[in-house]
Image (tube, rainbow, N blue to C red; front, side, top):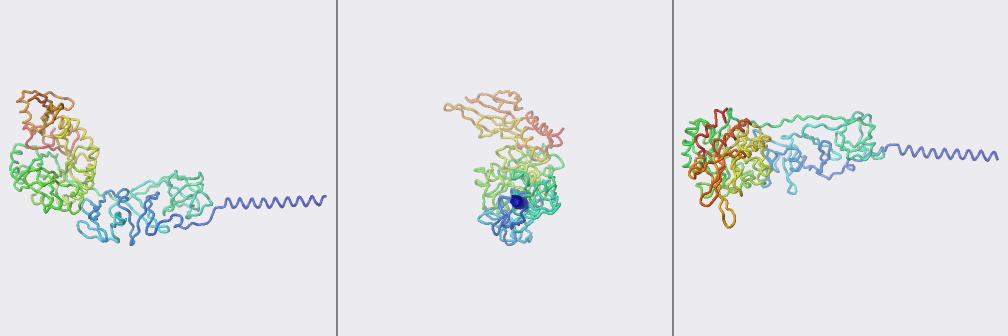
Length: 579
């Protein structure tokens, strides 16, 4: 019996040892990290001829194209993430970019770009198309953008850094591994040496409280155990890129601009009558240039006159020739309806238009150009801004002041992009009138006090005050309401100041001051109709000019010369408004 008991005890002991060994092996196996490596292509597969795109520590949804040694991103990505000022002509396949002194063009199938028509060599084509989609080479984009990039293989990937940034980072406490998943049994993506820096990836991607998702500095994504990493900290990455700054040609005194409506060559002779007794004006802007129809032999129609310029300058005035896109039916020498989109969206048409305008300005010794493109469509907006960028380069090179007329800032006209205008042109002119216009459904003021003050306040959020010229009206609108077929028919006509005063005098009407609009208001019956006027005269203008004075703007303008009463100019002092 004793011998049998001893055997039993030994057996049990051996069994326990075996169980312990098995458990030990199991535990060792369970807690021993996997040492198998995953191939780069397997971990982050990418199609042949493509590469992953990584912006800082985020993998982008689209891939780059690899072609003939070049790296290409689609134009939409370039505009959204690298440089919004590149411009592509889809019809003529031209990629354009402007600096303060250069107009840069690049074309497919040509490893060069042209700066003011000077050829510059590149390693690869700057722009290509694939499936109708334009792509821009990073080599070309990097020349003009705040971006740097690194290309790495296995898997193919492009690391992009744009601008300066603080990145949430961690350091490895010891040699460790970056794994495919948040599990020590997951395969190794890459090794991580002690003190190596990794970038923290959005916490929303964490699948374990024991692991952190990171990106290595060479763009590999994976998981590292938290205990093997430092606490997170902010690492700052600077940019040595210098943003181009567009210089501006600004007057050393406040601008007082008067528009002179010139509809035919004969009208040029009326200048002296308008300026003879006016010592306050500093700039006259005749409506001389009109955009011609696309593909016309001459890009513009011109009424410019050398003797006009000589006369204006003899009175100490600068001359800024106005350029418009209007269609005035029946007027002498004017074009039929102009398709502004067709003109401005064509690189060829834009170039011809700009060259013609600058040539006329030089020929007639003008001091500047005043662009008055109205009723542009939403689709035309980006092409208009590109036109201004390019024209600003040509004007700057020739010492010409470039100003642009605009409606008052509002959401529905935001595509006029006043901020971008202010960056490239010299003066942004806001036409603070036509609050109620000929086609309005209700009668009202042409330019109430609140309409102007809101325009001033809004534009100053986008354009520096010294570049803003606020335009006021020298006219009043006479509204006539007539009962017709059970309803009311509304018509109106624009009246010069003296004409409006004469109309009230003839009808023995005394206007009353309206504090809301800060204008005199008149209402009277005539020939069975109700007539209404919100008068523009010295008191209403004084209210507006006082606000402009307080805002310390670059100047004031008025539409138009010849509509004003003589005493109006007394409101203007030695500067734009006087003190």
